[in-house]
Length: 525
Image 1 (cartoon, rainbow, N blue to C red):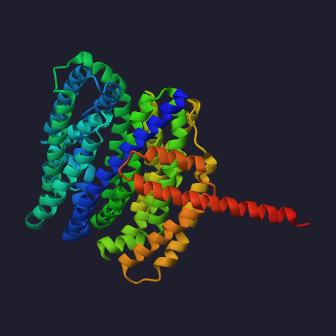
Image 2 (image 1 turned 120 degrees about the vertical axis):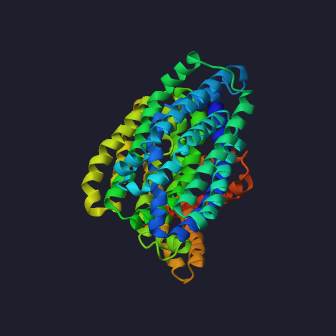
Image 3 (image 1 turned 135 degrees about the horizontal axis):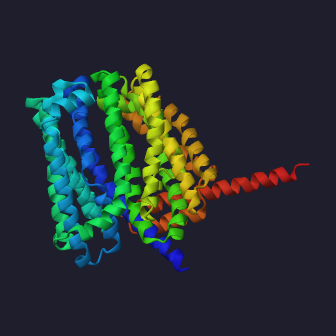
């Protein structure tokens, strides 16, 4: 009973955190999305492509910052959220460490900006843009540290506010500065947005922990021991991101890169839900024991798929309309890129959102690093083989294959630790999500206006999926009750209750129809 209560409490806390995170990040994404639309139209595909590549060198330099201290501080914050005396020296040591490493990385990068632009981007003429992005190395590191620590403390309001500050500032300044200064102005607005969010995050963290008291190697050493495997995983991911941008710069034109960035903006919107869920699950897994975390993982994988798989299927079906509505006809390649990127959400029932948080929560961060190695081992040779011929599509397909490889490796490791997914539910959710698409496309095709078409197809998709999911047995009445309990403390509780009551009514009708069909079949000679 105690373990069940602990699971229920963790589920409720995770739901509150996920909804709060999603709300804040959705607002931030709305601002950033409007800004990206304005920038894409102002700069054009080629200029937008240069803007998209400009942060590649800064991302490469970020490899020499943090070293997993942010993740370690988040874990300690979740364990000692009420003990400011224990947290203050940990936070102080972490902040000073991150500032020192990021400043050193930025200073090293300044004289090498031209050489790095030529080596990584094959565009030595972008050296000036690269220099403008170097402050991001410091501001991004401080932002990530503050965000992670506040997340571990369970401060949902602060965590939701930080992305809003970042994207509101850059969303306003980037288009305004792009008018007179072009790409340089857009990049400057981007950097200032991170600077504002980093400053706000540091102030909020300082107030929450009672100040950054002096902490030294004694506090830093255990955080590095925990965080370095995570850092290696993150660093490998960052390096792969730099490699992906570099190979795109080598094989694709600025126009193709701009189209890919436009598609990635939509993909970022899709990732809002998955990132919010993953972030909220980490503190929950940290508080539960290994056995409790393994049980919670199974539910997290199933419930997250109910949201993410249909989002991906709808994006695949209506990719063309989405791109034309937002960016116009100039971005003719973006719809195909978006459809390919969205495929990964179809296998979300395999626990793609929860796996990283699970291993991080139970303290086995080395598994996340090995999972990143599995991704790299698949992605690098595949991209080298496919990119020269298929260009951007080759990179995207390589990333999909590598993502599935990494997920299957992590699932095998989770199974060794008593955690598993329901493969039947994963398959049924995927099938329901895909089969809901044809009615949606048919409903949307009745209208010529893109916005009206999107509204009609989205409504038709939601109705079709809400019937197919219970029909295929994607959830039970017990699942609906668990979701109702978990969401009861969230701001969307009234809406969630109405939706769950509707699904409960559909589920009862499905069961009644199945009973009647069974009786009719048994009565036949």
